[in-house]
Amino acid sequence: MGTSELNTIKKELVSWIESLKDDTLVGLLNSVKLSSEGKSGDWWEELSESDRVNILAGIRDFEQGRTMSSKDFWNGLANG
Image (cartoon, rainbow, N blue to C red):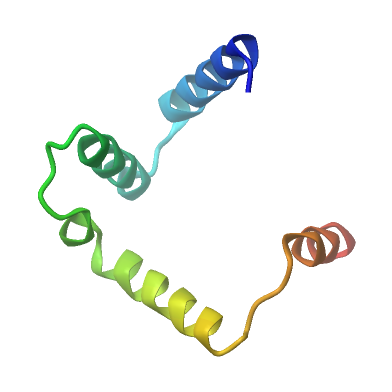
């Protein structure tokens, strides 16, 4: 990824983050930030119970082969 493309993506992310109204999502993004800075103990503990349940369900789905390609997902969404 080139410098120009990286800067464009950063600006888009900043704009998106500034528009967020979901406290849970902002908290999750903050946990990622703190974790990347080495300032967070265990990011898992900072997730909401709902987020943890959803992550574990996704892992179980993967382990049991209940997955689809991103192409199939996007095609299904577009043809909804």
